[in-house]
Image (cartoon, rainbow, N blue to C red; front, side, top):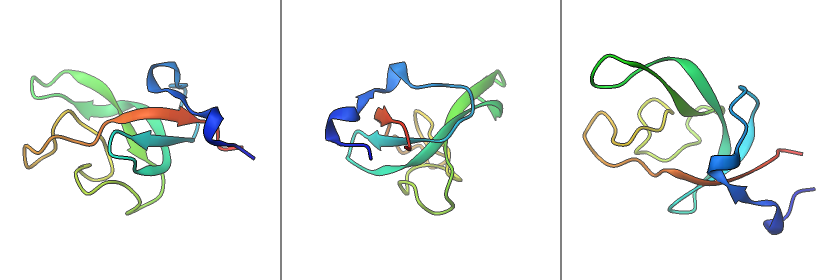
Length: 87
């Protein structure tokens, strides 16, 4: 069982596609994974993104379950700050 002490800075999170639990700046907790492909920034450059793994279980500011600097409505996204393993 994971506990409060298990949270680590998001910069140390695995980016290999495995599901992890994340906590955003505003305290939203959810399952997510880093997806390396399938996203483009405003300049058309291919980029990765944090993506919620459970449908509709993400902050409303995440466009289609993906976290960006700002969403499709130009609203700043609630950025992941911490992570911990799922088990």
